[in-house]
Image 1 (cartoon, one colour):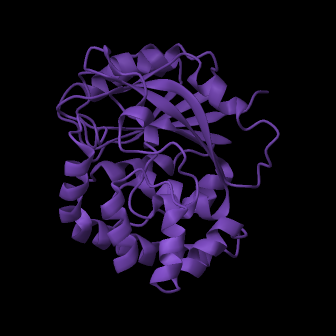
Image 2 (cartoon, one colour):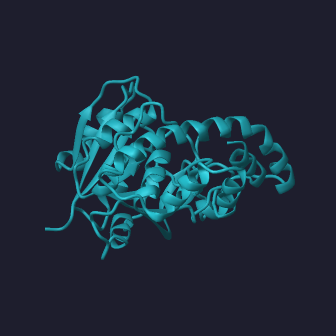
Length: 306
């Protein structure tokens, strides 16, 4: 029997694009999947659309919880708790999957040790609300870096959208439980896997990533002006970036110490803690090796002031 994929879909007032999203999953060339849904108390037709969709009628969708007031991160976290399959994909209610998304991403796991936490992510095509292309590539058009795969690459911020991720069950064991006070679940997932496993990039846009007025996060860094002006303006964000980085490091230190009893820390993880716990020069050397994708001055100051 083919390997199973759990799809974590956290919904909230998603009636505008949800049916299209589910249609794109139904058209996947790889069909051994189950969609797990937790709804955050939608007041529109979200649940009606789900229950009327062909995938629900074919028992390819399970609705687990519908209580509200959780917020995006906590709703995704509880949705993930129901995913017990060999592989797990995160899904946003307003995106659109290319038909061979699952098939191509699963191919990246071939020959890999299933006991090692592995996360595969793809590029994304940026589109408007009607799926018309805005940018052909998320990573070449935004401030994010597709080279991000080591702990230092996630020090300032996350660079891998959750909807572009597919990871194995070992990765899920590695990053759970996701703390209550994490900014976003996808940042935590990528950061934790970078310490214990492997992050692999698939250089092909396998998602149509909608940009519209109701996006929770959206794609950062588009419509940029001059590089010099952007660098200067980025300095004002240093206090915020420094606060987030310190906060994440404190949470990570505790989680990594616990998970080391289950998974060996990889060499990149060992080197990261060695440099972070060292002086400014050690952190500067690590910063020079990072692929942060963020503004240089903001990232440099955040590393040095830690």
